[in-house]
Length: 220
Image 1: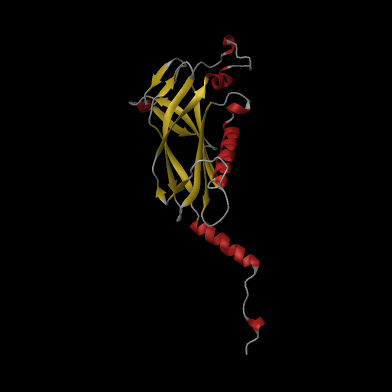
Image 2: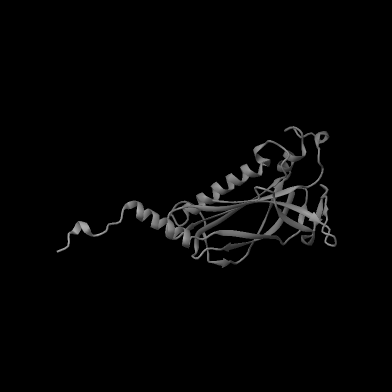
């Protein structure tokens, strides 16, 4: 009879390699498309707008335990953490990943997660903004924010977002994050227009979302 030791065996490293190859071939790569669907409103409380997000899974299998987190912050003009989009993005992704990891577990207080199938998924509209105290970080030279210290009396909002998700066959966490400038343009010419910091609203037809250079989109 044939010696049992002559039969090929699979090393643990081979099994790990096979699992990694399966993950790469089947894993989902979730991105998102953003559009502004409501006016940008400046009122006595702050600034807010409504954005539509459409998750897109370019992989070959569903992405499960999906969550997104959003924030609006002022354009970088201060060293304060609250106005640094990359620090804000890191914090948002940590929150979204915690929610994704806790999805389906009893007693976590996490709401229902989403499953994103290959291709584009159903868009979701989200209304959010920033309050006056957040805007002062950008508009003032110091934290005291006296009116005389306002240095740029215009609205320069930045949208920071993170999409977190997991594969259904492996306990590993992924995310895709975004830093997007909200800009106002002339619909006829496409030229950018300054948005003065005055109360009122700007129609969605004059607003655009523009990924910041170099670090506008990031994924792990």
